[in-house]
Image (cartoon, rainbow over all chains, first blue to last red; front, side):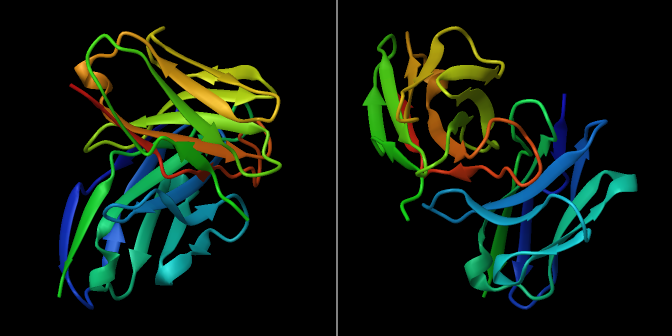
Length: 114
Length: 116
């Protein structure tokens, strides 16, 4: 069974600071990887996804993530955060093949201070 | 194009009652999955349905059941509600059933269930 570990549960940053949120997964086979964002009072939105190819993927709003297969990691980055990035971020994985069960991490709450 | 829709938006029930939540997938999507998101946690997989058949089930008790209709919409039913069932219930749809390449899930806004 797959599992996802997010290292930081609550992160507080000042505007313009750089962001890196850690994510590691556990699964022996091939996976699809995702980062979702949940803004206050809004529903889950896809930030970016990795299926194959270039391990550095770019998403919406200036976010990017790098898949490092040898480390089972898929860390999320943004060079300069804005107050509007205040939200909860979820790393997720689903195993290639079989039925489609997306396993989510516990989430990281990001608070950006103006 | 309309995304995944869910109804109702909010629901308040008391312990022991039964609840039905509804989901309409994106047009053309044949797979519907249900997730439970308890406050402070990530979503947890409950069920996946494809072509009206259950394809996957998470670690939830038999009080939870679901079905999918010929038009691919779906219902999630929860019997004998407990306080711990209070959560945001999310529906997601995709083209196919499997976790294959590029078969991405799209999430709806969720139904907020409060059990008193």
